[in-house]
Structure formats: structure tokens, C-alpha cells
Amino acid sequence: MYPLVMLWRGLRLRCPNCGRGRLFQRGYTMYERCQVCGWRFEREEGYWTGAIAVNLIVTELFVTVAVVAFSIAQVPILTMLAIGIPATVALPFLFYWHAKSLWMSLDFILHPVETATPK
Image (cartoon, rainbow, N blue to C red; front, side, top):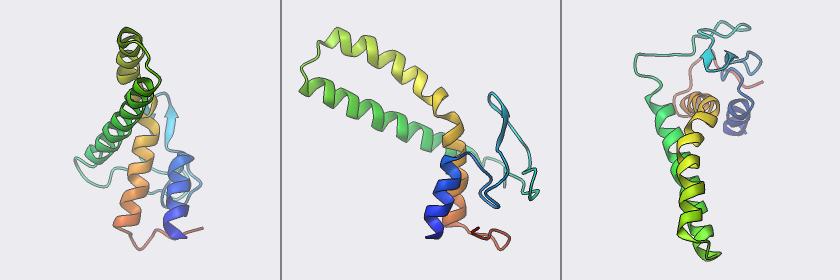
């Protein structure tokens, strides 16, 4: 149950510690701490490397599924390239918020801290 709660918080872009605080101010600007519980989001230097990996994996999976689906549907190669190249560039930007949020949630699942309590 606890991992599902953490993943749900990640999908909703909420603080992984309390589940109530928002992660992003506006655009790509992230709060340094949770406004509700005061949890510092960046736990250590280089912490967001995991979020980059999550973003890359999701983008690659999406593009792979699309290419396989287009191939099965026998979509012409130029059409695949016209859709695939912009999608490959745009997806990491569109998934940025959720990649960071899901990374924090996964980190809490794998490395729980005493102050993190499921609510």
C-alpha cells in the first residue's frame, strides 16, 4: 500500500513526505522546500540524476512503442520521422515535472526516511 501512496503523490506532483505540498511554483521552477512540512526536496548534490534517467527511460519507451505501432500499421517512413523526431525532442520537456516527482517518490520507496509517514 505504501509504495502505491508514494507513486500517487508523485503522479499528482505533491511532496513525497506529506503528500500535500506542491513541488513547482510555475513553469520549470521548483520550490526548494515543501510549504506544508518543510521537507527539502534536493536531498544531496546530484540528486536529480535519477530524474534524468526516469525521463530518458519514459521517452525511449514511448518512442519505441510508437515506432512498433507505426511499423505494424505500415505507416510510411517519412511520416514516422515527421512525427517521431519532434516527439523525441518534446517529450522530455513535457514529462519533466513528473520525472522529478516520480524520482522523489521512487527514492522514498527505496530509501525511506523516518519523517516520511504515509497519510
